[in-house]
Length: 162
Image (tube, rainbow, N blue to C red; front, side, top):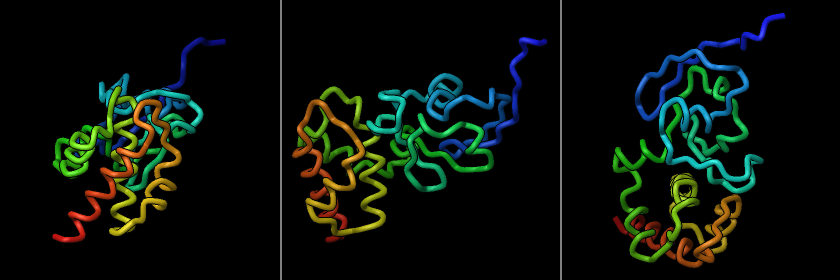
């Protein structure tokens, strides 16, 4: 019996860059991003898909990177917080989070920003209750959520008026 671990080919677009790697089939997406690509903005929290710290976009939809195997993204487009930040796509959200002190330790912030981005793409005028509900899968232990909801609400208002 061999102790050799099987490797599979992964071809994926990460933040606009084509990546081709041989990986273990059991490697989670968040571990692939953090350990193989050194994209450490997505955090490993609960490893059960509950906290939202590992949130990334796969083909434009938020997913929990700890629950998805990297190989499941074969042929897909993956966008991490680094890609969103570098492109400027979330600059207004980042500024609003900063202005309203909607971030403290920063551990939940990437997941909150990506989840808020998806919400604002789906609904341009969410109520405070809708914002809270949409963000309910993302845990924050520092801010108490009010400042986060304030920031998302403010960005929605500005985008609506533009």
